[in-house]
Length: 256
Ligand SMILES: [Zn+2]
Image 1 (spheres, rainbow, N blue to C red):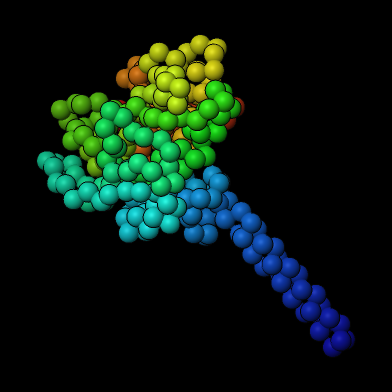
Image 2 (cartoon, protein in one colour; image 1 turned 30 degrees about the vertical axis):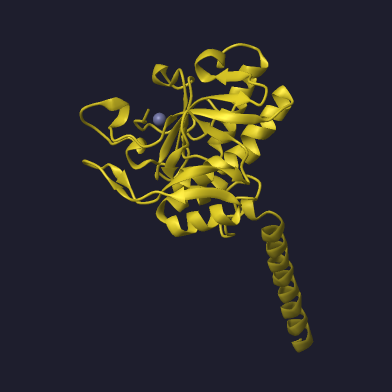
């Protein structure tokens, strides 16, 4: 009987070792799909990438280190304090060159580090693959409406502060390819062509990286831009997308 008990123990031990080995192998091969593996901006987008990016909101030193490790060039901005809930301590400008190829216009983008990190992944894993798919060439320039803006949601006199008030958001107006082709949210969102399909693809891809992704599908206030932010609410809000999925819709008041 003692032999049988030992054998049973050994079988259990082998089973546990196999499970541990399997988990270890899965973590090594797909770190983006397990919550405990550290984020690396060079990893493909996985099940937990959005949450890990969002957590950088509270860890600026880690955010800056991840950008540097990934070859993204940034310049830290001095802390800014505005009225009410406005201001930021973790601002950076996304500089040209390095591991990124897209320029931001009409001026370099200054934003919270977490948004810069999310935009770098969006460029590599979403925007450029979609541009190659739909146009056969990459995006050279992103036209934006800015990030930091000391205001409440929809510019109202009272109510919740916009994510823009801490530079945790960016408004994307359009894209330009190397040959000068322009794709704008205002003009090209609707329709059956490649430009509309591209815009919907980059919106859907943003939903996997940002806490909030708003497009013309959401309301008229977003008819001419995509609003992307990293609000800390523990989940993603992505009305009408990604296509084919219901997403996590929550009844919250959202920013422009
Ligand atoms: Zn916005």
